[in-house]
Amino acid sequence: METITWNDFEKVELRAGTILEVLDFPETRKPAYKVKVDFGPLGIKWSSAQITKHYTKEMLLGKQILGVINFPQKQIGHFMSEFLLTGLADEHGDIIISAIDKPVPDGSKLI
Image (cartoon, rainbow, N blue to C red):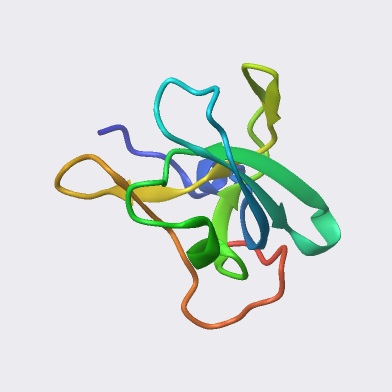
């Protein structure tokens, strides 16, 4: 593992956002959703997320998550992913999202 500096960490824009919409994404090789998230003053952004094992679309609506919003956009088929929805792998490699347990303003930066 490489050690980073505080300045390195500050470059990562890990922001709170609220999930507004979740759509199926059948064109992907691995099961995924298209997720629309409100990052407050930083805007509304879309991402593709392989989180179908633990979450239904209905479970995700209104949930606050952590997203990296300063990665370059990534083309996934005909879809442009605008941020990275963060999470951790369980014992089977399936993703558990990084969720926020008490409400914070959308766009809040992880500190």
